[in-house]
Image (cartoon, rainbow, N blue to C red):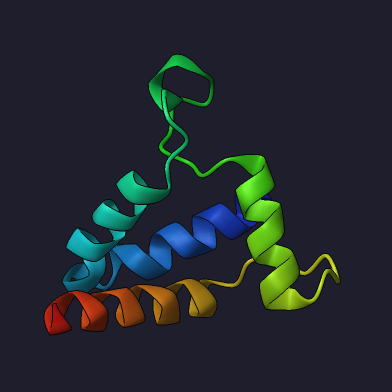
Length: 84
């Protein structure tokens, strides 16, 4: 992920406090095991998982991850959590 995309996504989530708990839960669920042992010391998904999801979502066109897509995903996760 490009740093500019990460910043856009971070800002988009930051201004929506209702999604913060869901975002934290999803970050923990998707984080590569032992992420705290490797730089950049952030709970990020593995590169292979991120590439697979990008191919599925964007058809392998190399599109960057959009903040709107992340917000839709988090809203969906929140709704699913509420249903359980």
